[in-house]
Image 1 (cartoon, helix red, strand yellow):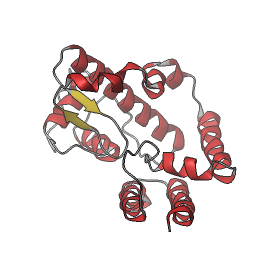
Image 2: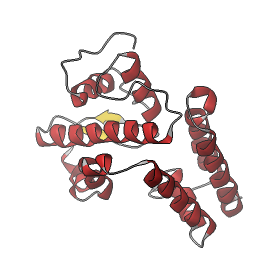
Image 3: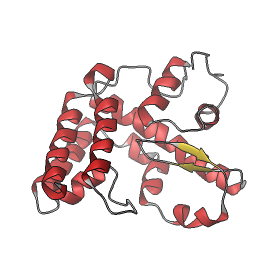
Image 4: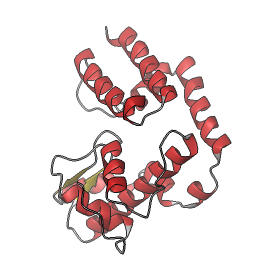
Length: 198
């Protein structure tokens, strides 16, 4: 999408337009890039190399996604499936109610205090906390959470994990705007999962 987004639209409306134009869904990275190329004034128009800029951009996009999910659900107009790997607009189905009843991530991203009160040190602590879990007894669980496979419904196999790994590497590679530290974290998680699923 190279067309400029209407700057008078709220971020939720801009996101909705982008999701409607991509029935197969978009990754978080693709969504951010399309918002930037459409000159959205709602997210920082800065390189995502700085950890705090990356966090704030991610937070604003996920805040809009959860608001949009609530709005569409309330109108029975659709359901937004949210994950950094794939954000997709799905038709409304009453059976999805359980997915939106209690979601700690929803609570986190809809509380703008978490955006306002998070500084660069906090972002570093979030990353350090992740690494501690990776090195402790919960390394497998932490790696699955990073790959967003912790709630995967079918039995996991190495082929599925490698597919997700390739998606994450492609998405977070420094040549595509990602960070080296994030890529190292993904590689470490893959090493751990290979030990458990090989």
